[in-house]
Amino acid sequence: MRRLLKKTVNRQSCGLSTWLCFFALYFALSGVAVHAQSTQPSAIDPNIERRSIDEFDIDSENFEVSAFAGVISIEDFSSDIVVGARLAYHVNENVFIEASFGQATAGETSFEILSGGAPFLTEEERDYRYYDLAIAYNFNGEVFFTQQLVFNTDFFLSLGAGNTDFAGDERFTVSLGAGYRLLVTDYLSVRFDVRDHVFDSDIIGTEKSVHNLTFTLSTTFFF
Image (spheres, one colour):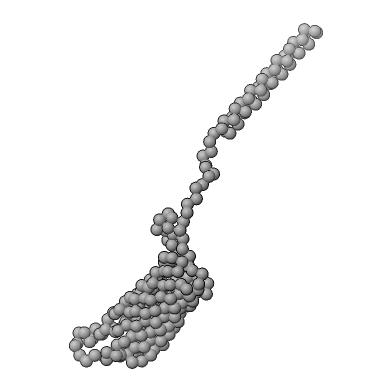
């Protein structure tokens, strides 16, 4: 009986020793793994170097004045140089109201060129002048020339109405347009505009709606 108890006690002692050894080895390996993770360098560097960007905004003043020059294509007449000026008031960063004035001289019609006959218009009647008032909406953007040099830009759509003085008569005109503005500094910008001036005309026959496209480049100042 004593031998049996002694064997049982010995077996229990051996089993207990085995488990103690196992747990000791487990915790030792866990400590080594945690130490390795803590000493391993991070793949992501939290110290981010921020770069400086030069970016020009529109000046705080709301008025914009510009002088422009370009080409106008007068329907039924040849194209000519157009010059003019614009004055705009910016209601906010997206909406502005603009008054425009432009003038050009209409060339000859294709019939006049081919036939060599009597001209449709006198020299004075060939003077083409228009003025209108339009409302436009800006879609703001940016353009990156370098990593440090950034310019603000606007793409805008416009709708307006006014009068066109041409062929000895004033005609009610609707203007549709689009443009692109690049802000060079906080008070100076460069603009490219495309406008279509539409009015009813019966100069060479049956009355019809004519489209007169203008393509202009301008320098604008904010004040």
